[in-house]
Image (cartoon, rainbow, N blue to C red; front, side, top):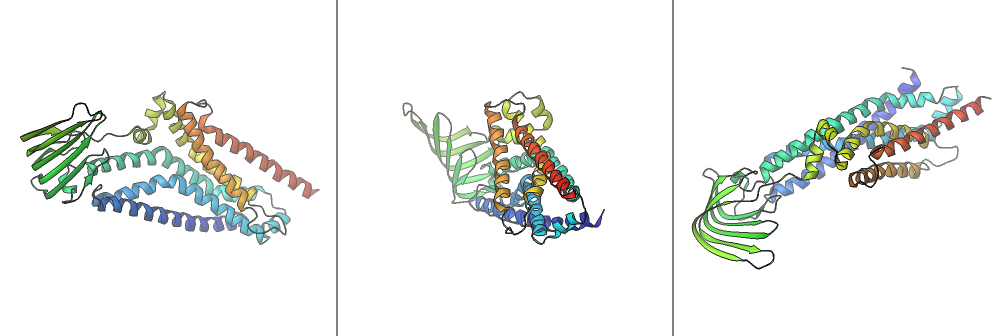
Length: 356
């Protein structure tokens, strides 16, 4: 590798490590605080917080790596332009391709890594997060319950008990609240024996208490006292959005649902979008003589916002059926490619003028 390419690459790589490391630290801190709060509130098991945060970081890398690389290229090249180092490189007769070559040496491996994360890592992480949260948020898993606290799960079920015995799956002086589309149920029991704590089929036996069933319309409310009362509570259901995010590529490819097609296109386009976004940062980082160092900040920020929000808007429109599946989410990378060709043509046009 030539000295010029190596010098530029070292500058960019150093910034990538600093910026991506900082972004990961900030994201991990935020996620840890969020899930530790849920654990303190009794809605999530403390022992799975670390695993969930790690999976969340893996998912976030799909966005953090492109952002880190984009910012690093913009900052590094902007500094080199500001110090007139790139001007000196061009004055020595070096081709503009050498800038692109130096950036591509880093961008191509990272773009491939982002593609692997988007297509395989992110769905795998979402599936594992759902499984962990499903197991933890089953408030009938007595080991996760806290006495004298409202223990709430994702489906809105709530349990309050004065005493909890994890070894015998037994609750004392318990209040169970559960709601469905048509009614709300409230159970007050002297003791509760958990028969099946699984999220898919939770059931308990209530002893010596009162059951209240309140209809949404208020036409068929009822109350009954009981000595032994077995009930099956509302199970935790996987949301459609979680199913889609954790679906395999094969499942998405077979589906005719526009939302599934949009998810597939989103995964497939992440790598090429990363590469194009970074390449676009090269010409936009150029600073003309006597311009301030931060002159390029606005166009670079505007480009990133357009790519980020444009991709999300296209995915939503494809999922809603508002725009055709073809080109669908690929509309943004296509526009980025056109912009990239324009800047490359401009760079080499300027080079020919200077060489005359």
